[in-house]
Length: 144
Image 1 (spheres, rainbow, N blue to C red):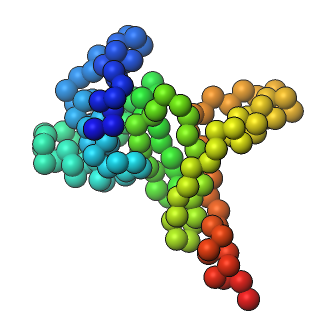
Image 2: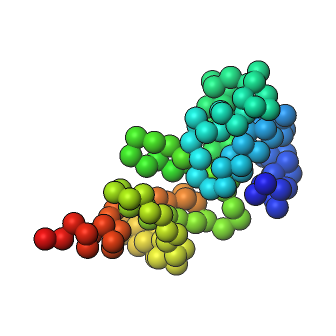
């Protein structure tokens, strides 16, 4: 499980909260997705281990884990994807046609954030940025 490389119990406690059994199970279910995973996928995994956890609890817990920055959420079109936050921010480019996903270099995003701060006087604190577009292959295959 990805989150076992970090002491999330300590990170949660540092913020004044506890790592409850439900929170631990939901973190496990996210990790089992090995990257971005949907609420439905998380819930399906939980039903095998803890069928007493209902969908409302999953949503509330995900909101809480995102709020304290243990989990990050990427909104891709109408779908939300969750993954464990790492120590370093990471960002994605996702093709809206073939759903190809690639990581975006943090230096590029840092430069963008710095420009926004300088020009708009707004400090972006997001650790996870997802940008939708069209990959090179899809652009080439749709060219006349």
